[in-house]
Length: 53
Image (cartoon, rainbow, N blue to C red; front, side, top):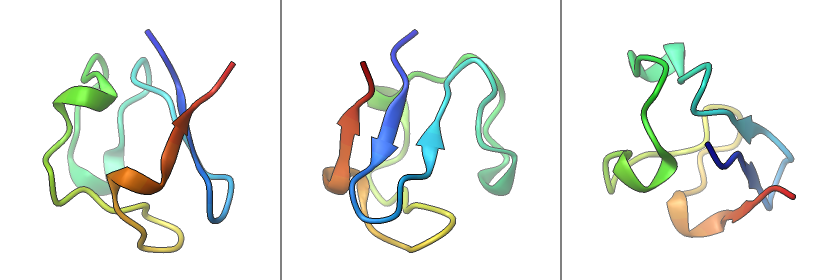
């Protein structure tokens, strides 16, 4: 699964780990995150994330 990095602060969303801060279980693809998802470190929205190579 594709990882995504926050362009503002560098926090990485790894779908294999999930986001415990948001009660998101492992296996949730970035595309399937809620539209109001925000970076847990800096608060920017999904549109401020980029795919991580």
